[in-house]
Image (cartoon, rainbow, N blue to C red; front, side, top):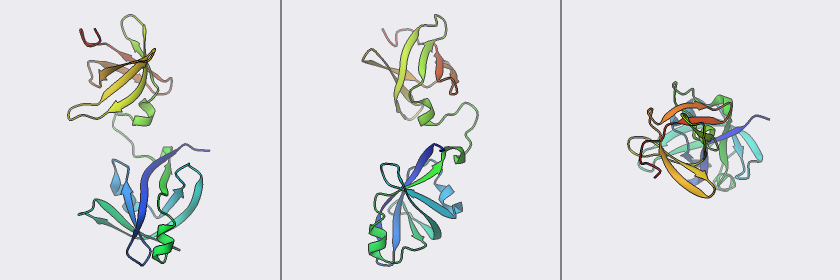
Length: 173
């Protein structure tokens, strides 16, 4: 079974005609406009149903999409889908430019010092900042920050779950 990626969450009904409020959880929300079918899952990941998209529009003042799905004709039907997740197969994600990675691919990577080969820990959290992300690397219960910058992150091997880094002098002292 293919790994699933959540790209949206149904927040509930909009009005009385079955329209749904959809909150985007993707950096590429324009993808909703080209999706003819939504695959809906419960929050625990179990499959709920597939539904044909009949209409979709962006509600700018609320920052949400309003969507009409086939078979959802009234407010009760829409409310029954509250909390459902719109998911895609991981291989359907938008292709990223070279040197960019999905957050879920970065989580759990083993981090090694490029020069010494020492194991430094595992990526356990990622924080976006204005200029670059910051990875929290944990080893033996201690979490340390690691800026996601080209002179620090020297290589990432998602397939083998490894990252080679060069810690800036004084960062972890």
